[in-house]
Image 1 (cartoon, rainbow, N blue to C red):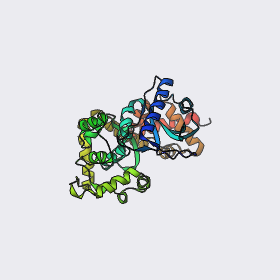
Image 2: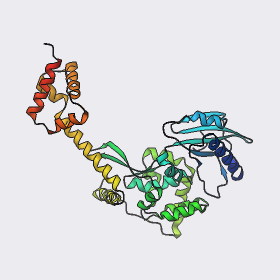
Image 3: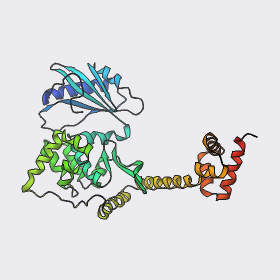
Image 4: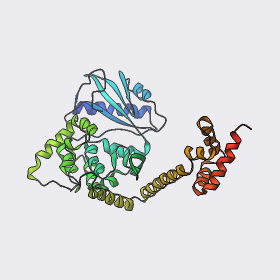
Length: 351
């Protein structure tokens, strides 16, 4: 994605020619792989030329990028995670085509997220301020341990319905779908105007100086992101939303995140259930470590080193399953735990 992944220099194609190449490539892939959803990423209508072609490929575990490259008679293949860049021989030279592996349940979301240049990236700034993650896999919530913010417990899915995600972030979802279906995102200005239509927008959250290092380096290289920053500077004649985002780490900032969570819980009960279960699982494992750990076992049995490791494994494997093991140590008092350690220690010690 971006047109510069190949060793060979990728030519730029004017819009009319690009449409021909896009249609031919998608048709070939659909003919060779009829069981999969295959779709080119949507561009804004008046885009004059293109440096590459992005195509989504529906694939779960049974994906071999080389097969798709072979179907298109690729002149070059560059693997980069879920994105495979290939050289496509065209009359004008070599044109970069990116095959983007996309799981079935996030295909529709990815199709919309990747569309219209940096549209998804710009929308994602609002989600990020709320502590969420708006990306090609859906609207996700990185849940961190209550007592250790550096410990990521899980990345929970809020929704993979793009319209519902837009609504939660303050956007007019039906308007987006109408503009998408009818080709009304004609230029970058149409995209930018939609991006700033949420009441949660504030130009400050987009400024590169207010981004973390990784995001600043990445987005500084993106032409559309820089065009958006320039466009924001030119909007003195209209009133942009200026949501009062609190300074990170303050009580007000935490309150904003909590209000977002509460609204999200109401709209997405499955997310609320997954959230509660993840916290419960963490609390359970934390409590379990207090009852089952090497320091405690050493104090009780006097074992150390290799023998202590053998004891810990022996105790864990003495239960019929993991649930029985956890329930025992979570519910038993110290004397019962002590007796269990001593019993299992006797089985591994030489007579």
